[in-house]
Length: 153
Image (cartoon, rainbow, N blue to C red; front, side, top):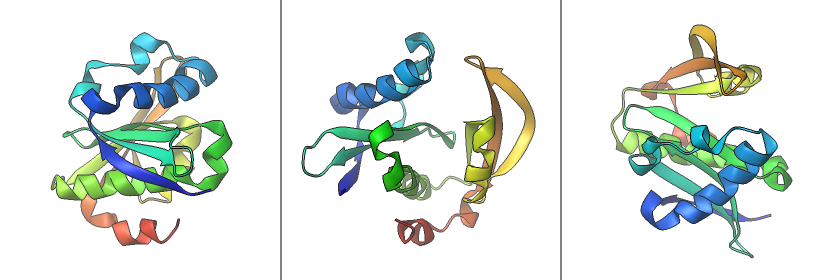
C-alpha cells in the first residue's frame, strides 16, 4: 500500500483528523470524546497520512510547541504497513524545524519498548489517564536521526 504523510492545519483538516482519531481512540480504545479532543488541537502541528489511491485518511499524529508528541493513531487495517513510523518521522522533522531541545510522549505502558527503539527513555512514575496506565518518555532532539527513521519505511 502506498500513502502520503503531510503536515496539515487543524482548521482545514479537522474532519479528516477526527475521522481517524474517532475510529482508533473513541471506538476502538473507548476513550471519551471529551478527553480525546482538547484545546491543544488548535495549537498543535498535525500530520495526516492518506492512502494514495483512495485519498482516505489512515493515520495522524500531532506535536505541540512544548515538544509533546501525541494522538498518534493508525486505522487497524493499515497498522502492518508501518504508517506509525512514517508519522513519527514527520513529527521528528517538525520538532527539528521548531528547534526543540527535547521531545516527549505520554505513552500507554505497554508501548514503552516500542518508543525505546526511537531513543526515548522513561521519566517519572506510571500514572493513569482515561483508565489506562501511561508513562512519560523523553528524548533529546539531538539523539533523533530523521534520516535513520526515513530509511526504516
